[in-house]
Amino acid sequence: MKINLISDTVTKPTKEMLTAMLQAEVGDDVFKLDPTVNKLQEKLAEMFGMEDALFFPSGTMANQTAIKLHTQPGDRMFCDKYAHVYNYEGGGAAFNAGVTSCLIDGDRGMFTAAQLASLVKGRNDIHTPYNKLVCIENTTNKGGGACWDFEELKRIQKVTKENDLSFHLDGARLFNALVAKGEMPKQYGDLFDTISICLSKGLGAPIGSVLIGSKKHIEKALRIRKLLGGAMRQVGYLAAAGIYALDNHVERLAEDHLKAKEIGTVLRNTSYVKKVEPIETNIVIFYVKDTLDADDFMKNMEEKGILLIAMGEGKIRIVTHLDYSNEMHEHLLNELKKFKG
Ligand SMILES: Cc1ncc(COP(=O)(O)O)c(C=O)c1O
Image (cartoon, rainbow, N blue to C red; front, side, top):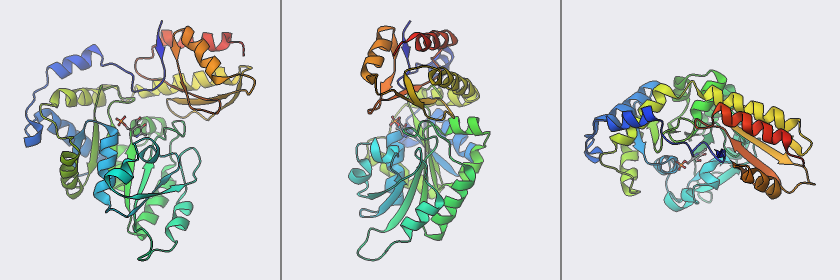
């Protein structure tokens, strides 16, 4: 049995999703003539109570477009030191938008309004980069699937308003947070200027992200997406997978969260694990004891058909997802229990 837990991006479309894709009505989306893409965009804009939305091939392109549309070269963006937009998008904020990043020393990828306020209050004149944008990520990837406290997000938004800053949400896994916390998309639509949503992570589509925002912001995004080479043609076949995922794969995220918590419980009871980070959604981050080489542990698991991902310094990540069945779960738990460090 092969069990791939390196990311929730490894899922393949279900038969039902493939059928929905094959049946999609399509057209040339560059001319806004693809009815399925239009439907997906309208669906997400409506769900979040925002004016408009735009389909992208990737979360990276959706985030990078957002950063570019909110800033001018030389401006400053604030984000957590763990932020995907800073660490894992190829330095795109600097390359595409020419912005400089102010990294905030948060906890598990989350900072406070007070931290942001103290950084924003610094000198802001002709010598300094203009403060323009705040990006947050919910759930946090490098932070182990942590969910932000919504009240703290409201306080952060207050700081952005007081200081004339735009507010972008990297919501690659926002639906995991919504399900885990019982929150509504409109709460987020009310708070942020732009939100990117990934359809190809926990939701199980093979590709696709959507940027949601005001008509003015999405109009700008359309131009930037073109410039980045992300304008696509009969892409309704892919948008159909996203629509199917939104209709069928949201509530089930709770199953991924439960499995992640069960993995955490087993890991905490082994002799070879030093620490398991708190588990709120579908990401488990743990550290093996200093006496065990993380690479040896990973190799041992790989020999049993189990793929995990090492994050350095004895840190290992497991991500549960749609293709991780109950049978695989039982198998993994047994192997974790059986392993002697
Ligand atoms: C938090 C977060 N944002 C953005 C992305 C980028 O998505 P993509 O891989 O579709 O470019 C990822 C990908 O893992 C992510 O985890």
